[in-house]
Structures are given as structure tokens and as C-alpha cells.
View 1 (cartoon, rainbow, N blue to C red):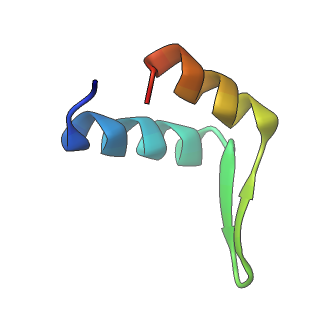
View 2 (cartoon, rainbow, N blue to C red):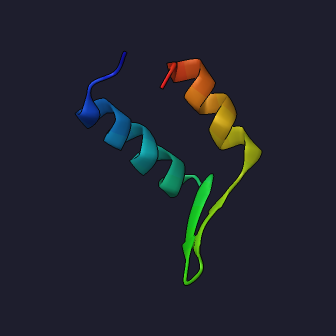
Length: 42
């Protein structure tokens, strides 16, 4: 299991690479994001 800090790093990475986009309605999440979460086992 990953530490909180490492989870934040993964989220930062995803934001930087447009896997997650923040909008007024919330977040737009691309399916690749979930593949990355599986990869990191978060």
C-alpha cells in the first residue's frame, strides 16, 4: 500500500499529464487514470 504522500504524487502526475482535469463541475477523469491506479495498486 502506498503512503499518502505517494498517492498525492500520483495525483499530481495525472493532473500534469491531463489524465485528470479539474472543472467547475468537478473532475474529468480519463480511463488511463484508472489503469495507472491499478498499476500503482492504490
